[in-house]
Amino acid sequence: MVREVLIYPDPALKQKSKPVAKVDDQVKKLVKDMVDTLYAEEGVGLAAVQVGVSRRVLITDTSSKQEGERLRVFINPELVSAEGRTKYQEGCLSLPGEAEEIERFARVTVRALDEKGQPFEIDADGLLAIALQHEMDHLDGVLFVDRLSSVKRGLIRKRMLKVIEEKKAALRARKPAEPRAGL
Ligand SMILES: [Zn+2]
Image 1 (cartoon, rainbow, N blue to C red):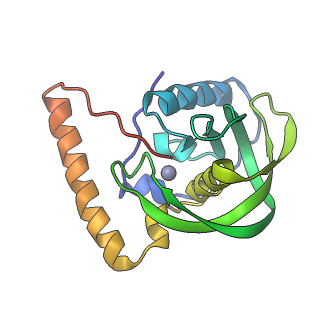
Image 2: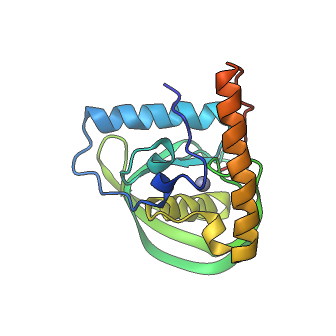
């Protein structure tokens, strides 16, 4: 089931997500809904908090831009190590239409549980490394706008309030919202 993605500055996006105690049927259903939502929105990554569930769950699928990649599920992800610096023009499903160059680690090692609750560790580079850092930020209530100047953030906030108003108007008129790409 495709869930509604919260748009900045929805206060729920500022919450620090809580760890998953057990990968049970409820968590599996959440992951399935997140996958449906990621593909419906044509994103490359999604954190549970973006669909209003404040749990430490994120998914990535960077295969459209990174050869050999696939859908990946990270539950209770932890950054084990990181090195190098890189810049990338990032988007975000919670910031439709916005993109800003953000500097992050070039390579990361992340430890997590998969969708079956099995622990694994992955060394990531390229877009996957960026997506992982972006989505892990979401789990701590941080969006890429928080890494920009307050002036830039203020302008984006104004545009997003307009997007939220337009979405509400579209819902009232029962027109489907435009699909948006992002992380
Ligand atoms: Zn995002």
